[in-house]
Image (cartoon, rainbow, N blue to C red):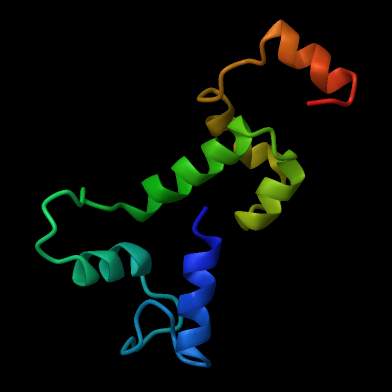
Length: 107
């Protein structure tokens, strides 16, 4: 859902860094959450952002949408779909009707 907004920011950044233009390391810890905190400083509705929680929420949402697990694992930088096991417990099972629709190819 953030694809368009992030694409616009990426175009504006050009060859520069998108979230932390002044950063000194190639892979900063908590890069996204630090950027969001600085950008929205003083916004009372902004919860404390944790990069691990953002990633977990993203993965679970993709699983809930029934995106193929090999696609999710690759996008998340995982070596195999086995790494998705902890997240599967947070995904509700399909209803009987949804299962039938998927098996019929009309999800």
